[in-house]
Length: 475
Image 1 (cartoon, helix red, strand yellow):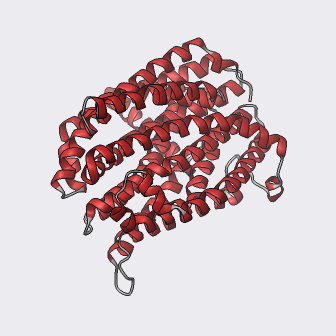
Image 2: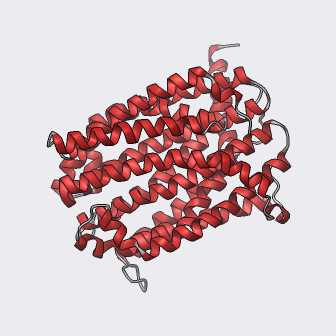
Image 3: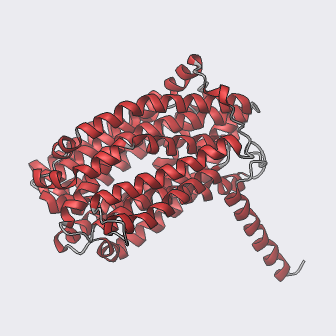
């Protein structure tokens, strides 16, 4: 075979694999064959999915960053997103439980049990969000003030917060149903639902924020409406494929009848999973409040701008690390423990390469990226400092994500919960408070505490991974 034909064959294989990944080929058995190909087939759509999730906040940030009173608008979007991390925690916790159980049942070659488990998770989501939505609508203004917003800023933006928290069911279902698809090995559907939701959001944002023809300009409220409508359309796409798709999961109406034994099993896995992300979310909320009280409205807006940009880069890495959850779950279900371990190492290696690249980009081009999203010089200065300091820990973030998804994919949700409790509440929060208040470093102290704590959390994750408890968990 000539060198030219070898190259053509290699390129052909790449395009074939890429096509499989984007199409969502459920015929591939993740419990046998090439681990590298398995990771790539899952990672490509998962990365693109998480990129789209991160785009939601960036699109809002871009358009509201050019409104009148932009510091108020940016702060409102940022603080609301910080509060929404609690809802994201519930959604991610439930989706992790659904992914773990569905993946394990698929690994055991029992797709009917997998489908039934997924539907029970949706029942739980409806029950939780009926309460969250009502509280968010009633107490939106108080929530913003509690987060460190000035009364004037809260008055300016509380309608945005009402709509965003009031539509929490859309957020929950988008994460949860995608978790069900990922557990079944069809990450492409999850990716496509986020693409559809984001395309709708990108089209609707300028129309609803600035007005177009007979459509009035809703300003900041328009950003919330656009995001909510976009997410709702994404959920409708997911539901269509649950009922009428050609995937391995075949959903039937009787599956929605409450199965309290299955619900208890899901809650047993989801509860610590939710707790681990609530712990992390509350830490981020405290940091946002600490920056707002020590840095004022401009300091808060700068931090929130940097944080949204950082999440844009981190969420794709989280998507890549999600491949470990599916592969670990399915391979443990198939009693392939060694293969599960190899999947973790392969995924971690790819994530380190990705995050190292992103770290270099943000350190070199951070100021240009920030300038695109705000024209306020005070906000810009703080945002650049925050982004460059926080990006120093990107490589450790990447390893830590894979380890968290390994534990959760195996159903061992208590281990990362304990790590998060000590890493965030007993280390990151006190460190940030001491640096910001005691040493009078203000927001800079908070920025420094973030990569330091994330590095410590990753080192703890490596220790518990090597102990191997995750290999013996039954779900």
